[in-house]
Image (cartoon, rainbow, N blue to C red; front, side, top):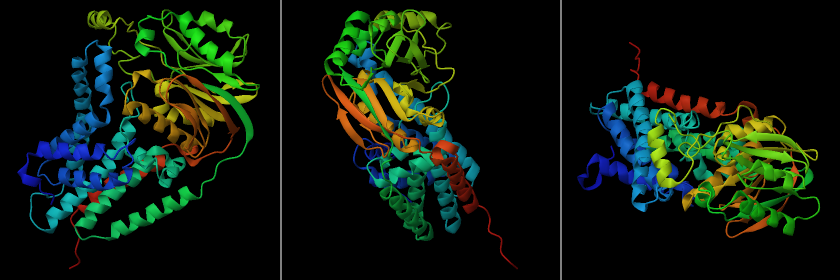
Amino acid sequence: MLRPPLHLPPAAVSGLLGLALALTLAPLPTGILTPVVLAALLLYAASTATPRGVAGRLFWAALVMNAVHLSWLMAFVGQLLGSPALGVLAFLLYAVEGSFYALMGYLVARLIGGVPVLPGPQRLSGVLGRVWGLAGGWVVLEALRFLGPFAFPWPTLGYSLIDTPMIQIADLGGVLLCSVLVALSAAALVQFWHGRTKALWGVVVCWLLALGYGLTRVPGQGIPGQALLQRTAVDAFAKASHLQSPEQQFQTYNRLTQDNRQPGEVPVWTETAIQDPALLKLTPMNGIYGVADLLGSRSNKAVAWTGSAVVGSNDKARPVPFGEYFPLRTQLDPAWRMIEGVTHMNLETTPAAVQLSPLTLGGVVYGTYICYDSVFPWVARQLTRQGAQVLVNISNDSWYTGWGVQQHFLMGRVRAIENRRWVLRSVNKGVAGSIDDLGRPRLTLSRGEGVIHARFPLLTTKTLFGEVGDWPALLLALGLLAYGWQLTRPKLTRP
């Protein structure tokens, strides 16, 4: 079994393994090491005697993993609350995230059973069964973290493959299928360390198949389209606090368009670029615009505008928890108003989209979604299934700092692969750019203020992920759980 170095307390060893795992996740270029570190973590968690011990080790590992991977949240919370020292409140979120992994570990350990406290082969079978169960449970937990009003799918194992050809299997089962490959590899490595090689050989075959699949993908061909993408540098907190007027902000976006637009280009403005819907009529050209009504209906929309009329719109599908969605806003009104007094922001919940549909403009079908929506695979998938020929992500990334900016961008890259569509990003701060249907950034702008003249094909390819969603990944994850359970069952012997 895995023994802690220098007899450190389990919480310390778990934290070190969580730190190591965080340092293999995107956007760091160390993703190839993720299965190895995950194997060590799963083995250490599985080697303790009780389900509560498994839960405790996973809690500390996940807390540290999230604290490192989401370290940018501390700066955001400190800025939001007006004091850098208050950034430590982000550890409450890290602890909540850790509790999800702890609960998963506890349930898996109870389900798998086994006899890890006994010596010899029975103990080994019990531990290996837990390892396989935890590998499957990890992926199931990732799937659950895409759901519900507090959904927050950072970090997901599959994104660690973003810089490898293997990421291309996302068009078969989404980013969760990539997570299955990572988790499967980790469990097989644990078996290999204990002298059981059959599973590892099977994983090697899986990696070779994924590699071959990735290397043989080619860009799609289609009718050419044109768009003018923007990167602006408006301060999000000044924007939310109304320190800059809607008219001033409008002029920033309008100037970039008027000074740079080339014939045939469709302008794409960022999320909440127009904060007073009445200003939209001052834009005389067809385009896709981020329009907010922060003082009235609290809406946050992407609209298709012909120059004289709105011909389609989408609300934001997933308002950001505690950024645009405030739980118990009425019941806890005094507390929320106190926070409003500190932040000088209007903390009212933004209504989520009731339904999503592509925006059609000039005969082109744009699958348009807003900011945080890009981290949820079902949003882009739904728009593609309805006929979107290109995906458009308008975003305000100035809430993010450090790794958060890159993490948000790379998640958008995987949406391109899952649906085999180009993704166009117009952002306030963050990374603006065009991403091809293989998930490769073609043109990007990550600093300053400027535009991108995007040229892209309009595609109609269907993918297996588009047709069936996450089911292939979920069935495989349940298969890992079932295999772990089977390893701990008593073996029947013939008389």
